[in-house]
Amino acid sequence: MSANSNIKFVVAAYPYTNEMRDERNAIMEDIITEHYAQQVKGILVIGVNLHKQPCNMCR
Image (cartoon, rainbow, N blue to C red; front, side, top):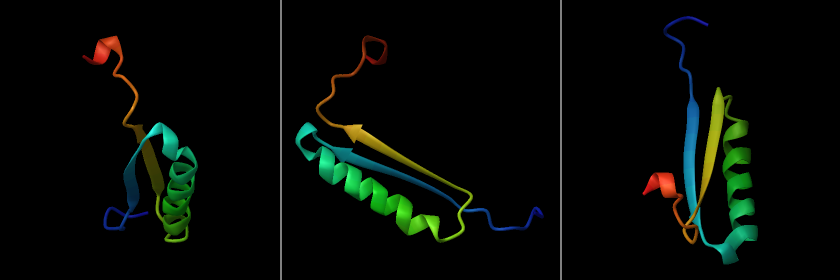
């Protein structure tokens, strides 16, 4: 791989609530599946639970 190669990475975040876990799983799977075929170097999908309290260290 040369320095001029196009290296693609996909980073996505998906906010959800406790009631939406099945929907979250399906959407995150769709994000991964959609980009997997595009010859990307890596895929990072982060699910963010909007109902979860921050940890004590994060406050």
